[in-house]
Image 1 (tube, one colour):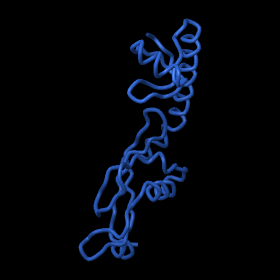
Image 2 (cartoon, one colour):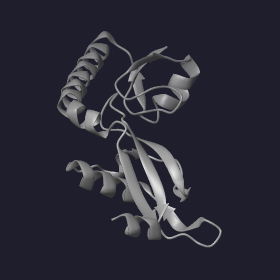
Image 3 (cartoon, one colour):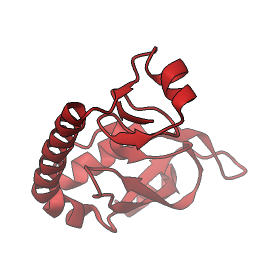
Image 4 (cartoon, one colour):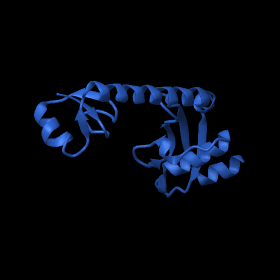
Length: 155
């Protein structure tokens, strides 16, 4: 059965897209929970128009942020951190820390949710971190975590 998804459904698709699912899954799960509706020609046309508008919006945002993405690509961000005797960090470096430091360096506000960091950084050294700006724009920055003492001596 073809359905138009009204909300994002894990392992099925995103809201506004048309998908072929089994009849039982559609009738017993998707439609009663208002996650989808049967794909009639009118509903499919509305969904396609909505998706086209969303694509145009993302493309416009990508064009606007392309310069920022080029400035971010390969950017080296040095973050000093307190380190114990064994070389382990006291605490960790989070997405918020990275977003604040990158924002200061490039002069453009980066949201902490845009920093793609699966786990906080808990070790010294270089770490590659992606920043999801919009659409396909995902520049990678290099986060270098250094002991606090060495950063104070170099400045």
